[in-house]
Image (cartoon, rainbow, N blue to C red; front, side):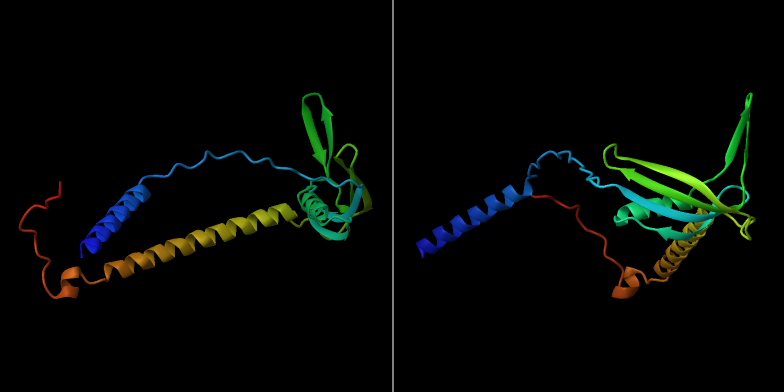
Length: 192
């Protein structure tokens, strides 16, 4: 029996020591900066986008695309074309005035692997079009974003209000237990 008592005392001492050791905060290594490496293609890329431009010079929509070999380049050029303004600006003295022609435009994007630059060229295909008074694609996207954000905020407010209503309808602890919660008779004492 002495062996059991001595062994259990050793186990208790070991568990207590492990418990204290695990309770202490363990040091973490300091965060290290990670290096972001962007791998640019080693070959030239070319894509063409035909866009419809309204009277303000905003791109209304993309009519057609001739993609390049690289999907990410196509995404970037497509997004860039949707946000474009195609206008002619004239500066006289301190004032600048800009005009836009409604029409179809060809926008070409060329990536040069030697310089890692992308050049963009705009050329008019035809003037006029039924889309002259339509809003630009970027404006439509921003309006959609604002509506979705407002709807999400309204849904969140409604969910919070519903949760508060449910919380106010909950019975008290005394009602659940059927008796009042007893008050403590002595102040709590902590072990030394």
